[in-house]
Image (tube, rainbow over all chains, first blue to last red; front, side):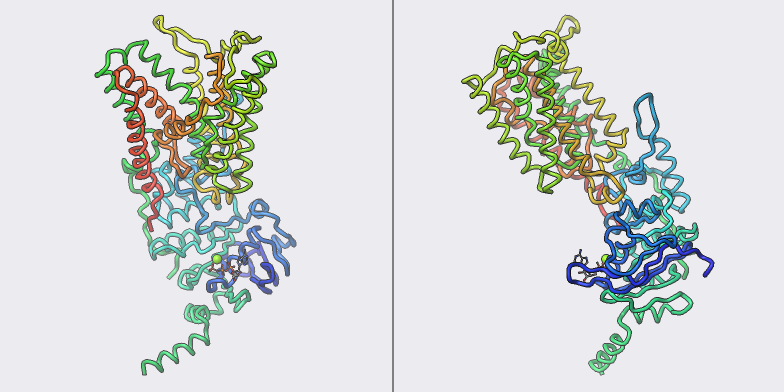
Length: 262
Length: 347
Ligand SMILES: Nc1ncnc2c1ncn2[C@@H]1O[C@H](COP(=O)(O)OP(=O)(O)OP(=O)(O)O)[C@@H](O)[C@H]1O
Ligand SMILES: [Mg+2]
């Protein structure tokens, strides 16, 4: 997949929280039409890494390149303006607001009636319905509160919104963490759909079984450092799972457990 | 397994259920309540459904309603304002003192009163968004401060605790025409405050439902962090809403001072709770993010109908509070059911 254009590249980035080094010398590549998975345990630095890509935090070491140009993102808005959209697990939608109002929140389409500018709600409803349908989500009633949708559907609305507003890079922070198997499947389908439309996707997850089917490259983090950086061809699901679980440490643990049984 | 081809069929195309559609109509409860109360007092009293009677309860509801619709906007935006009631006295006192003691033209006094009202809102708003403290406690402070200021300044200027004689001030006639005149229907006078109430309701309902700002109000109250993440200016939205309740207090305070040509310095205390009650009856959630301007106006109408209905029925007005308490509890419980429904997390 070497013909895929590189959208975002981090080279040896690091981040300090006070005197704590939360991220150390990590490199990652996001290509158009590919899914880059970031895996790691709690506290591994996954969120810290994507917050640097999303403009929430700034890197203290290393280089961040967007479209080949070295940048330092000043805010989430800055990242958005450069086509990097982020969907956070808990911060994706406003539950009490309707689907279409959520979809356009912050970028409401307006029409003029004389000197007045009002939301083009009919147009907004139609556009939201169509944009969701394009990603395979058919909602009959975009007027219902987003809170009445399932967890997976809510993530999908947020993803569809990012895609609709022209994101080139889509960052998803643990979109499947709180979801059941079926709901996670719905979200992963959206990830694949976004990828097929040529977006570069960064998928953060704990779960190698969610990452492997959709991922093109895998970055494993552990205590802020890169444990491995693989292309799909170079690693099997079993090996990925083994590495995630701590590799050698797990083997030692298994050995011990066998000892207990035995 | 490839997620691209996984045959997961989401159950997304289910038809909207009745309850889900009702969730989108927060004013439905207050409307039902208003119809019941209307029918009830129409049946048990003779005067309730006469032109005179209607004028009475619309009058009662109007100034309450003007404030209730601004308070509803603020509550949907996720904040409270306990200083609104006292502020209706403050704004009237500013106008009254400037017009009677400094002998200003009423129009000029109204302008200064407006600046004062917006400042109160601005201070409330900035304190809330800058400190992140609950607006309940910040505006409680403003409530006490204004109460002290009302009494202290009035006593210092006049030697007692009321301002009177506004009717003799320059510009009273023309200003009074806009804020405190009456219009006649079937020979019965209706105060013009009813028109202001209807106008404010129509305007704010339009703003809430049809404008970008209105969308931001829902989002700022419902989920401020989410809203900020997609670029909504949550803080300035909230500050604007506090200034809106200030604007409402300006209108109501000056309708009162021009109508009665006198203001008591201790006026307005306790009204802030009535505004909140009207907004809650109208479907506003205590937790923000949900509610209706029209509902709040209907909540105020309910208030006026019950208060005057009790007078017509010749009951002791003590029963009003009991009724109000029950109404509030029913409304809060009903709202909570709707909220759970809309917010429930299905997995
Ligand atoms: N704002 C912060 N201030 C100080 N330390 C922080 C901050 N955010 C994260 N950390 C620390 O940095 C390390 C990496 O945290 P990070 O949130 O990136 O991990 P994560 O991989 O996203 O974990 P999780 O799976 O639990 O979300 C942790 O040790 C965490 O305690
Ligand atoms: Mg995290």
